[in-house]
Structures are given as structure tokens and as C-alpha cells.
Amino acid sequence: MTCRQLQSDLSQLLDPLEITWWEPEDLWDEARLKAGQIHLLDGRKDAARFVEHSTAHQIVVDATPWLSHPLAKLLASWITPSENHQTSVELSSPLGLLRRMSVALSGPETAPGHLDRLKWQGATTLAHFWGPLEKVAAVNIQTAVAPEVLASNQQLIVWTISTLQQIITLEVATGLPPRAWCEAVGPVGSLVVDGFLDPSLAAKPRFWVHDARGTPRAEEFSPVSEVELFAQDLRLAQHDSALREQWKMRIQRTSQWLEILEKSAAESTLSRFLR
Image (cartoon, rainbow, N blue to C red; front, top):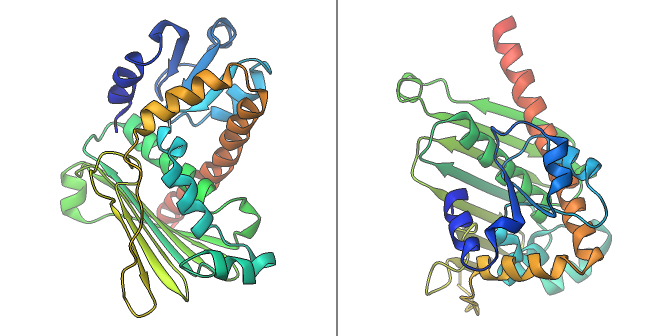
């Protein structure tokens, strides 16, 4: 879902004058922040600054409505590793203790702002499914330098993130058809989700769980709109301080992941120039 689509859909459910949108190219403006009550951040690299300068009563949240869908919460409970509760994880998750996860995000636009959105979505996905940064041991990065990629003005970045027990691969690409795909693999089973950023768009579920023998499991799916749920959450947050703090904490955690991704990309670019 594009930001324009989200703005259009939310305007049908909420008063658009109550929401201040911050897109990647918008300049930081503390006066504008103080003047509004509800602030939606779209791929902002400086999102943590909004949390730092906002009041306890202001709503500051990233524009990721898919996280309001119950499917996102269910998948996170299956994927998020927990070394301290290995037995309970293996009993409750159809995957068992996570071993490997792959995430691929792409979009047709090639403007810098679109790449920032995809990076933020990637960092949000890691923060939601993976958790804190303490588990990260190493980050490697690859960027596409193939002539056909450069000629088409596409951008492709692939991160490989290692922990003591798991491997995560995150791929972000511009100039390609829109897609949000992820796969998680454990010793007991595997999970594939196609289109996880818009979990309600399909009449049938777009996620599949297989056991270790490849046998698929039947899964229930709620087709409720994540945008409607997000609008409900925005209304609730006006009176729920715990939800406001939860959203701000999510931004901080996502910002930490984004910082790791940006830093590794910058170091990779510098090393190529120094060769």
C-alpha cells in the first residue's frame, strides 16, 4: 500500500485535518510538530527525533497500518525467537525455534524517498518479527552493480544479518513491481507470507505453513481491513497513554534497526571506493 492510498483511505475514516503527515522529503519543523496532535511518519530517517520532541499527549506513529492487523501479531508470536523459553516456543509455534528468515520488499518508484520508505518498512519488519538489536552479531551487505540494473536506475540492497543461532536476509529494491514477501524456517516447520504489508487484500490467506515433511497446515484468516483497524487504534490512542508509548517505543526500536542498516550500507560504499 502506498502512502497516497493510505492517506486516501484514512481520510474516509478520520478527519484528515486532525492528522499531520510527514513524508521523507519534508523538512524538520518543530513548530509544525507542536501544532498538531496526531503525527504520521512515512519513512522518516529522523523518526526518533519526533519521539524526543513530542509531548506525552501527542500521537506519534509510523505509517505502518499492517501492524494493527491480528495476523501480524500472530505471525510475530510464531517467528520471534526466545532462547530463554525454547521449550515453550517449540510447543506454541509451528516452526519451532527460528533458524532463518528472509524478507524481500520492492516498489516501482525510483525516487530517493521511495527507497527510504522501503528501508523503513524493512527495519519495521525486523523490529516487529525479530525484536531488540542485542541478538545481532554481524551485518554484511551487497549492492547490485550489474549493468542492466544501473541502466534502469533500479536500486537493490541485500543485508545478511547474523546472530549466534539465526540468519536473516533483508532485500530492498526499487524499480520493480510492488511486493512484500517473507519466509521463516525452523526445525519443525516453515512459514511463507506473500503481501504481508496488506494482509487483508486477499479473499483467501496469503500465508502458508508447512511442517518439516512439507505437509501444509490449514490456517484461519481474518479478512478485516488493517486500515480500519489502524484508524480504530488512532482513535483509541487519543485516550490511551499506554498505546501512545507503545508506538513511540516501536519507532525507537525501528530507528535502531534502520541505523544499523544505514551504517552498514555507508561502510560498504566507502570500502568500494577505497579499493
